[in-house]
Length: 211
Image (cartoon, rainbow, N blue to C red):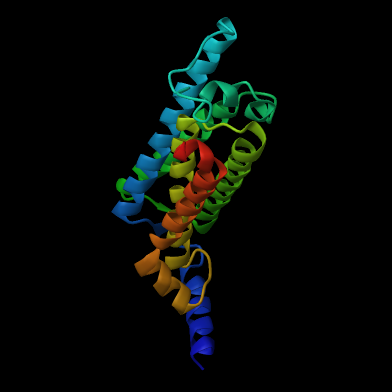
């Protein structure tokens, strides 16, 4: 009976929203600005270092600290140019968009459902892409880039809180229990996600960290 009521409530909320614009909370707007800024900063610094590396193949980025934390190794890899250009340039184009959406939310803007779904699709692509990059860094390149990791953190948080906003606001239809979960416990999901990444990093280089 509860499941049926939840389903009806979710459907009703979606219909009620219809084509009506949906607002975001002030906290969500701030989060988009901060995570977008983190990703943009990381993309900008990496791009500058890659330009220096092009001019001087012997250049060692400041974040190349040891055999594991080695930004230079990551920048020189094939995986750093997946689309035929430097990956950070993708970040230079997309993270400012996220910041712009966050600023619009802070200004009180209300967006159509398709707009929020577009942001959801973008963050889904982002978290999927950084997950692939994480795998490549850990198990193919065997090196980590600190600035890349900053972008990873920002993208993971951005994705989960965008999903939370869309579920709670009815942009993505969901049963009542799921909306209630996101209303109170969204923080668990990015925390768990990042903890798993940290655990994989720790175990992959366990002998290095403990030597």
